Image 1: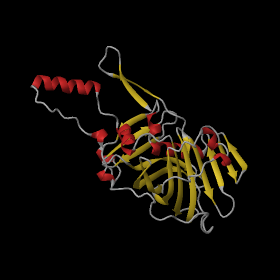
Image 2 (image 1 turned 180 degrees about the vertical axis):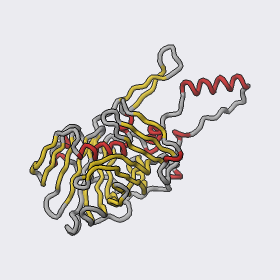
Image 3 (image 1 turned 120 degrees about the vertical axis):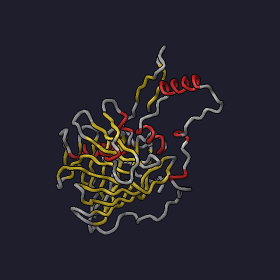
Image 4 (image 1 turned 90 degrees about the vertical axis):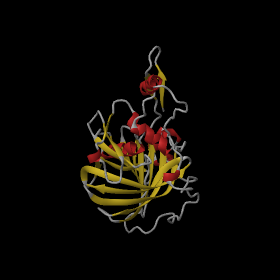
Length: 311
């Protein structure tokens, strides 16, 4: 969370950021041609969203009004004080508030139509814990495959058996964790990141505002586009996808639904190097799940299911 407070004797604001440990994401695909998942695809949400995104209240972005007429000098003083001590929050912070607040952990149970590599219907579950704990479980016709990143080391499991360990700082799974962290938005508030606004000519299609985030350790850049409701609807950034190699991954987010007070996307379309990679449809989402702790992304047995969440 981030807090602001006035400095002693000064009309500005000081600020500090406290971030809980990131969570993980776990995915499970049904292997191509592997024949159906453990659970059938669900229909409409059991707790459907009332109304649309455009109709939800936006108290945090309401503009203040002066109810009483004031002279020009008084009005100038008021505006000066507002600009000095109450400057508008950065776009990322406003987007986090618009979606319902910080989400330190999230689990997504997903079915996806994969178009490249091994085309077919896949099933996976992703678990994410801020700032960079990530797990991806892929469900196949046999035992599930697990890929876990604990912030420093990546591990691969076939069922419950560990089959590989990779502590290389450039391990591909680290790029998956970072892409997920950027999509989660909260990681963009960490110290050291440079956030610049996108020019109108650089905005992705269907967006009205955007930023580019640059990470200080490797200079990796991520472009984020937001719609009129400040929902993240477009994200492009570098990723490593063996055996396809490295390159830009673009994600388009849609079908936002309100779950436990948060607006979350149930549909994501991915393109790699501009080519359609996968169309993802969430079956169940558990935002801000307290069961996701740092130890949860070290062994498959500790990974929580998204049972009891909303769909």
